[in-house]
Length: 494
Image (cartoon, rainbow, N blue to C red; front, side, top):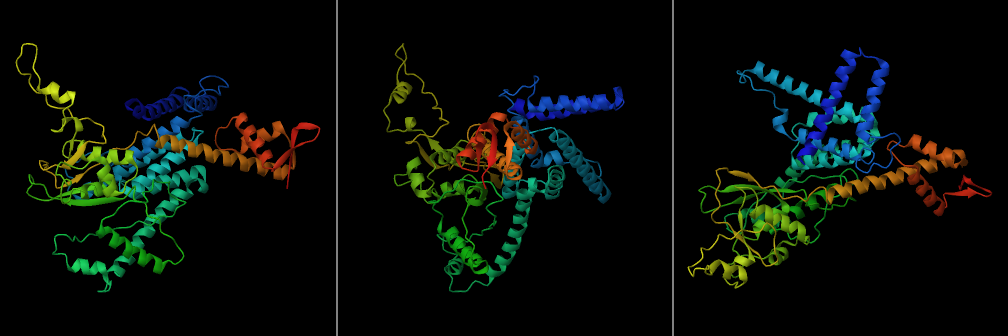
């Protein structure tokens, strides 16, 4: 991963070196400039040898496009990277304006460098897929440093690739603006909530220790604009959130009749207030929805026997059916970095009731007959079905607000593979559409001419074998057929 982070900066430095060489040593010679562009495209898209079509490492520039999108994501959510160098008179208004101007210039320079590299990448659809996914996460989790910077880069992508390339990403920004308007209207609606509402009765009884008044902010998203996220249909929300969800559904259904709400909890965030014996003041834990549900399992006790809750018991209390996701949540709450371990994990091997070989070895004797010193048991990093979790009463932190980041899956294993599969699936549709469009216009066409026209229309690298497979698929679906007596020609079927 450290090497991957250096690839794009090294490529940008390499391109800047070529540009300076072209300008200074060759005095902007056109033929040398064309050669530089050709070499750069070969490097970025994997053509390390002439007519090389079997290079599996780069896959037509897919990997470079993915790394380029990740590089932009890392820069756009890093506040330190956007900060200008400190000045001695930063408190003065003139110095503040100067800092803002320097930061804006640095952002524009970064975007220009990225686009200068992006122009030579053939797999622009791969960049779009990864950039759109990362943009959605930045917007929904509030990690975007500057909305103006995001919009500026989006407008540059639109000018480079057309309106169709950025239409869904522009729709994301529209959804965020619409959500703010909806929540403003909902706030007025909530303030006029009648006294007969069960929620208002609960708010009136806020003095009860079992009733907590909470607030909820909803982002209303259009399905077609955003990536597909995992759903938790059987998730068990606390009564406070259920009441707020019902209240918002009533408001939304009354205002927008005919629309259907499908709740997505995977990217939701919560602020959970927690009190620890070692901390004089309550802490605010910034967690996702699944983490908050696990924390609420320890609101009153550590299980019926007081020895903690097992994975299965937590699964029943939260309704999180995805076992791997629940394991990652428990790992983040009990085995994360220092200052975030609000839960305590007790391995099954170290429980007092266990008489397994590990416990016997720890209390046995050495070869001289003297008692062997008991070693401090090491906590396993994985979560077993019989391991138990307890509220960490010894937790302490100097911070009042603590962000506990969930342990994400390795991107190379599942999420990255799904993104590439979605791109490959979309490419099949584009090839089908191009073939049908050409056949509809030509009616009858030779195989080689059809392949050439399809390759000319596609905006991503494609092999002739892939196009041939799609032609066979269209023949099976009776969009076209081979001409009798000449199998190298195709005829369009209206």
